[in-house]
Length: 395
Ligand SMILES: Nc1ncnc2c1ncn2[C@@H]1O[C@H](COP(=O)(O)OP(=O)(O)O)[C@@H](O)[C@H]1O
Ligand SMILES: [Mg+2]
Image 1 (cartoon, rainbow, N blue to C red):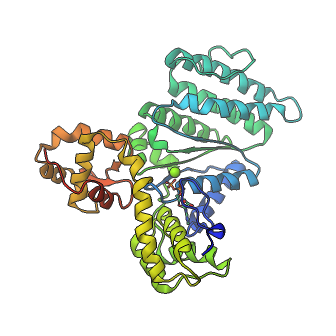
Image 2 (image 1 turned 120 degrees about the vertical axis):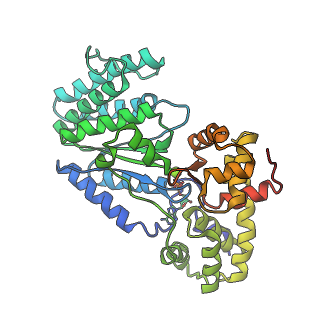
Image 3 (image 1 turned 90 degrees about the vertical axis):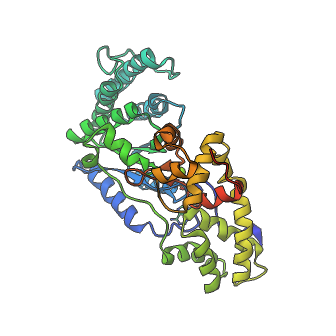
């Protein structure tokens, strides 16, 4: 069919033509936002899920919901090599300027800016220069101790006061939260804890890989009570079918039931893969309906494309030893494996590969679904490892 009209959107963060199966989660987010706006206690949300399930797309949707409900939003993505202050300061500065520029003088908004300035001075001491121009005098003694935990809380409280004064609720959206250091995550949780205790109108909506749950719990044991951790998973068959059929139907195109079965079997309902298969099947089918023949050709083409980019970019960031470790994990199967079994498979002691496993968790390649277990964070990565490394090298 004409690629010009292809509705499917494979790509990190690309809005899907049909946001399938996320109704309950969006309702939960809507309620949370409404409660924050009304000054009622509400737990911030951290969306948890594997790569490619649709977390970023959901975060963006929640940002739109928040903005439609009068929130000011701050949206950032954490990186392995960018600090939390460097990430947050520019948009928080913008937020405070916006609050300050609203009609009527707000002493609270002005104070927010002074506190931001002193926070900047504090972090400069501890992590070097960050370029954020703010032409105000700092509020010396507030948020400038250089201790991130104390300073970020003081900053969030000042921002919360300004937001409450302006009657403008604030949503802070942070993607890839698993990349924060433990100290940064601690500071963020502590800041949200203080904001919640004072019922200030700030809500945090985050997203991250499954390891985030453990990281948050280790950073602050009360994180479990402060946040909801909604799980974002693969789509159930009915939702996966809708993700494919609805965008096609809008253009008078349909999939045969056998084509849907083939795509479901191959993608296991993972959102990214559904978009990829839908995209290829559309282009490969000569006419509607998209049949099982087109779906099978889409399988070949989709795997080829994923191997070249979605999987490949992750593989290329691995050291040779990390590759061997993941290859051993893949050899044992598609599900979570005991770390001891992986070590046995590599013919090494489990302690000797513990640092390797830790590095792979920090890189976001694997996680521990239960103590002593190891699983890939990228769906279908085991099959990719076997394709890209047909022969195992064993230690
Ligand atoms: N609910 C959904 N229904 C259909 N496609 C979706 C859905 N959520 C995400 N997608 C698609 O999946 C892909 C990955 O989404 P993304 O939000 O980047 O995942 P993540 O952030 O979890 O890695 C994108 O191509 C997006 O269009
Ligand atoms: Mg994402």
